[in-house]
Image 1: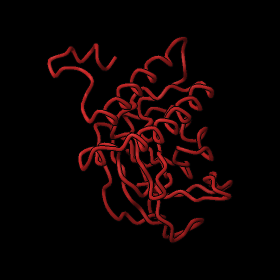
Image 2: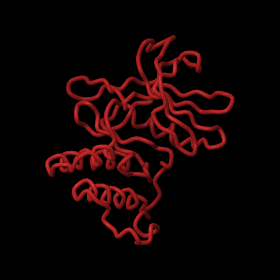
Image 3: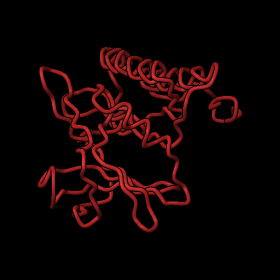
Amino acid sequence: MVRRGKKGGKRHARSQEDEYCPSLSDFKTKKLLGKGGCGAVFLVRKVKGPGCGNLFAMKKIHTSSVRTAEREVLHAMSGQPFFPALHWSFLTEDSQCLVMDYVKGVEILEMMAKQRLTLAKVKFYAAELLSAVDHLHKHGIVHRDIKNDNVMVDEEGHVCLIDFGLAKRLATDQEAADLWSLGVLLFEMWAGEFPFPEDADREVTRR
């Protein structure tokens, strides 16, 4: 659900424009893309200022639930492949708004529900996801919520890691949490099922 520009075969991210701070009136909401406990993501069109006419994804996070790490992580990853670029962030009376690339595509979860993924596709997605996670860790960031509905495949067939609501700065050995979750996800993609019995302790299987 994120549209990403390409230049020379690689995504060309647009950074936040200097000296410009948008407001909600600069955007027209098209539809709801997703909703969680801390906020929601909307498809919006820019109607004023820089980027006028373009589609973006806007995440509105309830002020009481704002985690500054998410904005910082998105800003740090902007311009890198396999991540949505952050264009602007601003505050309203009750929300923090993060305006990102609109990634037009499908979640891995939806793909798995429709058909069994081929081994070739699993290998390709695995290589891109490993690259994305390695890039996060090299920048001192841990995602902490890698799963099949937080990975999208865009129209060009490349993965995009999304939803950094639980992300935080890396502490010693915390890379293991991401690698464990990624291993579970890759097994699901290959086998088409969760790698543990339904009655397995969820704390053990997801920690």
